[in-house]
Image (cartoon, rainbow over all chains, first blue to last red; front, side, top):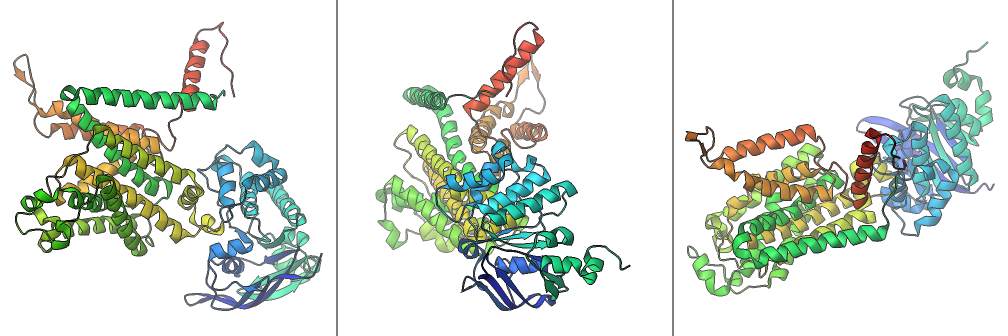
Length: 240
Length: 368
């Protein structure tokens, strides 16, 4: 693993009308790592991801990806640069087949799809079995696989995931985190937003804790897992 | 479930197409007996183009627009103005005369249709800027408004020298051959199917399914909505142009809201999101309305005048049938499915299985 920076966020501010959702945060995402943002509801995690993806406009600050400024770019430009967001709540295209979902994932490039499809099917054999099934008929865990597979079809360098474990059974949540590790091992940098701090910190190389739009703490996954304040606030463990 | 070999499905499709052409040729040859049926079929084919164009927008992109009549009017007037023979123009524009640059402007039918489509598309492009930012019902209301504005413009006395205002345009030469309507309609629908099957078509469907997810995949929302809208307007314009040639005389009243509702009915009846459904729906609706004329004439059975049988009663029956269809087929006749030989084959297989189940001792078909 290198320490080369893939994405650098500096002093990012995002306002929705009068509300300051993100109040000047700075985040580094080194290449080939898993970086996670944890925090409670309304801390600004999703807003940060959506701003990187270009869906939400930043008020000020800079987001630098491989030396290029992302602020001011449109979502489709950002996807073509190699950043893909797996949106919160999976959002698969329910009335289309699994195969069609995957093909739409590759919308921004016109390469031959066969190799990409093969790669996704290799990661998720279940999707190959269900290629002709409508995505809406898949189980929650399978839909999350599809959402990740669909995002991988765009050949991202940075995969951003917004609460992938949301609303899934504990056993499946474990699978999802295994998937994230596997994707990362394939050489894709992952920026993960999670409320499930315990699981997220376990797989993360580095983590940021967001509180009402500010970074309140940061450190390696293990450091934060051991931190008393984190344990109390996010892991539900009381001080002795 | 067994499926059919691809070659066989192609063969079946070619067979069906050939049969349809043969029937049309036969009817065309015996015009005197089949003139009425032929004109119903022609109108159906023209409506089918507009219905598929609406379905492209509503069923596949998820944009509910009610501007059909307006865009059809653009196509119709373009075609009419360009194809009315120069010699007859003074008698058509007998009230206020024709505007100078238009007096000599003519185009062959194909070029006029294409131009009609292009004008409708161009207008769609500009209207798209403000209205495509609206969602669902608001988009429908805004496009409905635009359609009425177009109609009002056409009927405006200030445009008398272009559109002949409320007097309408007549002496439009008809189609040189009956089959041409079906040929052009078929070509238009085929082109729209190609669009829907392409990666752009998939992008449209992604937008229909989930805008946020589509945007995350790098699909520019506005750009692709605009694209679907312009393509739909183009074919709606062509359909309007064909309607003008078919009717041979048009005026602004031809393009009232009622026309839009007819197209909408066809789309809903056939199934929102099904191309074959729209085609089927347009033939059923156009033909159905004519068949029901039976109810418009007073009927006397055994010397007793049957009550209610009088002019306008067919529309009551028609509405009742529509209600029944909508109640029993919530998603239209075809739902979101398309007609396919494999679908029919599977249906026959299921039928066969049922029969073999009721008669024990016989082996059932293969499952899955």
